[in-house]
Length: 432
Ligand SMILES: Cc1cc2nc3c(=O)[nH]c(=O)nc-3n(C[C@H](O)[C@H](O)[C@H](O)COP(=O)(O)OP(=O)(O)OC[C@H]3O[C@@H](n4cnc5c(N)ncnc54)[C@H](O)[C@@H]3O)c2cc1C
Image (cartoon, rainbow, N blue to C red; front, top):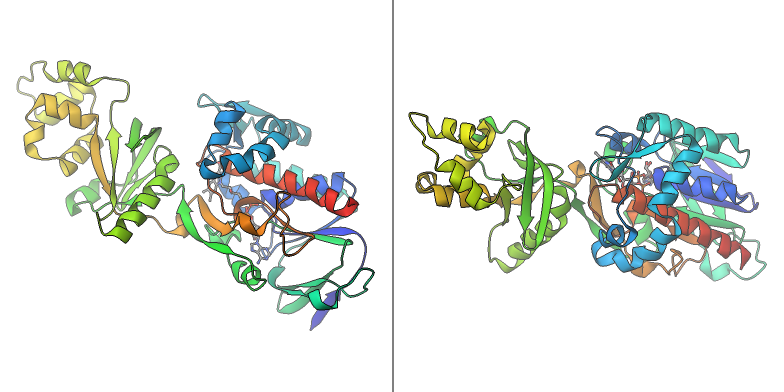
């Protein structure tokens, strides 16, 4: 059976009910538009809920230039979008929704008392209160048929038809020139159980659009641990450490796992490490790459040597290190795993190693597990308004676009800011 929705009222069709699509819906309803939001899942915002599991880091309080620099090669592109809807604006919007926020010690911004689920409920309530909003869950976008040849000004034919699959039925949604705008907010390619499965790629590629392959970002890495160490590496954290790779340094926590490493200190470096491993693979120069762990970022080498040189008495080396430099058992096992016995006998070399422990990383963990993905619809398909150049009236925003940023609130802020910009652009599209 096939359903055809060919209403010609002026409206915006949003596909994807993650934070990007939901925020665009909020803005567009405020601007007076009719909004239809389609999502393939039984409920919207599933990845947003997952993001809330470890504390929902909405954005960051650092200065806007520093914030902008987190978008790496796309920083220049993101600048006007972040200025248009800044971290401060996001906090004010949360407040308007009834969600007070606070700045944590790291400068990251979190909801004060609400969990992600409660915030999502408030957000959806605001949308559903608006009579111009309609939500269609269990609608999977399968295909987009364009009707370029038959189009002309004043033509009654739709310029495109969106084909959804909903509970084994085909649902067609007609898109009319200057009557309907479409916003793709289809998300990235990790955590497919949240709906972010990246399967939309085919529908967009069939329109001739370029989509860069998804890559893991903010992800763990695999190491070739010995069987002996693997048993000790049971998702335990090394706290207050720093990691460095080339000129980049990152502080925080590192989780040691049976397959390798994970955690907050690693994620900001993950894009650089992933690219280096890929480069080395192509040039056959080295298998994997190395990241350097400083177990004592607040102590300099001389201070460490002084402490290590204190009399050891009858203490074993592990006890001596535990007593004199507070080295925990996991860190000691890791030290033994990756260094030679000679180093352990020489305090100067030992101090140097404790501050510069090489960890060989073989490959990044799979897409499915990563917090975010880079790759997606490339920016050269879009103009500055985030409109698809070859398909006027079709816009895209959020994680489905080909950009990457570390954890720290930059992902959600990137989604909110691009959604805001696309909503503004849709207004201009209708009024031009
Ligand atoms: C474990 C984890 C923790 C995270 N923590 C944080 C954090 O603390 N701070 C932060 O800034 N970011 C965090 N993120 C990242 C953040 O959640 C994402 O960047 C954000 O959800 C992306 O929003 P989006 O709306 O662009 O895409 P998504 O949230 O992925 O939403 C896309 C939507 O599109 C729908 N869809 C996809 N294909 C189709 C189709 N063909 N038809 C119809 N609908 C479709 C999906 O069902 C989904 O609902 C975290 C992510 C994970 C996995």
